[in-house]
Structure formats: C-alpha cells, structure tokens
Image (cartoon, rainbow, N blue to C red; front, side, top):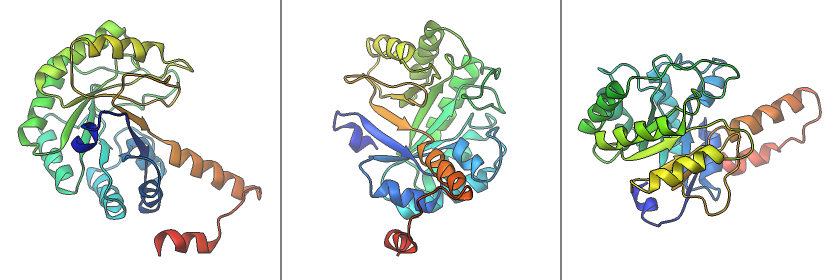
Length: 255
C-alpha cells in the first residue's frame, strides 16, 4: 500500500466479499481490495450494525488474502471497545491486511448510507486514544481515521477539526465520508482545506456522488459495487431474465 502511494497517482480500490470476488478484482485494473463491513454483513443476511463477529470477519479476510496479493484495506467499523483495538490491529496485520479503517462513530454504529438514520459521534479525545493504541502495536499496517461528520449532518468545519486531531494522534491517512447526492461539493471543499495543512493520504468513497477529474484524493474506494452487481444478477436469475455465465467461466477463474 505504501509503495503504491509513492507512485503519486490516485489508487483505486474495489470491494470484494469472497474469494471469488477477490479473484475478479485481482485480475482487474484495480490497485487494491476493499473488505467492507456492509458487504460482509449482507452476504451473511445480516444488517450492518457490527453484528458479525470479529472471527467471522477474519475468516472472510483470510479467504480474500488467499485469492490476491493486492493490498487489502479493511473497513473495521468503530474498532470496537477502546480496550480491544490493539488486539484486532495485531490480528489484522497477522492475516495480511495492509490498512485498517476505523470510523469515529460510537459503538455499535449504523450504516452511514441508511436513510434517515441518526448517528452518534465518538468523543474526539476518545477516538484519538483509539488511534494511539492502534498505532502503538502497528508494524507496517496503516491506521486510517474515517470521519463521519458529514454523514451525521455536521459541518465541513467539524470534520476539519476532527481531522487535525486525528492527524496529531498519529493517523496514517484520513477518510472523509459523505452521502451527498450527485455532486461532491462538501468532500471537495474538505479536501482542498485539508491539503493546505496536511501531507498524509486522503481517501474518498464515492458511492452516492461522482468525483471530478483532477480531484485531490490519494485513494478512491468503490465500496459495495461487486455485491450490488451480484445482487442484481441474482434477482434477475430468479426472474428468469439473467444472462448466465457458463460453468466453464467459473472453471476459468477458480481452476
């Protein structure tokens, strides 16, 4: 991951939720794999509320790591309790994760893209302590602070204040999250002001909006596209409308 960042171009990561989807990403143009709490929960038929056990999450990550040598970025929700974060950072690094993203909402979080959901933000000092504890055990794994101010309908200013604190706490990168529709006005404003004061990588997840050419983000994550594509295909198959891959197509991918 750090080697890719040194290339001074935007890195693109695509979501994978299984060994098969990871193989597809491995053979694609994308630079890295995003392992998402939403898609990992959804493939188990569960809501994205930190309900899936950590051991189950680790099993999925191991499956993905066996399928690709591309960098893996893991969405680790809130990171759990303050006392647990150091343990999980060590476990994630042990299974081959290159970056762990923790978000500054209170446990248990609600998915950021839910309509009309209320989101409880974590105290800045508590989240900074979580970053520090994660960094204290991290060897090469990157610790990414995900800012949910815009999701919680707070201001860009609030997000910038939090970003300053998280950088000072030792975060290796900042992820600014937004569900702004179509345009990327608020994340672009955040990026411009953040880059005036900080040199560490900045990450965006353009699920509901589109980034323009020449944006200032170092990593762009397509966070749920593989699951959404497969869900639509499965629904069409049940309706008898899908164009199916052949069994040979499966063999060609997995052997």
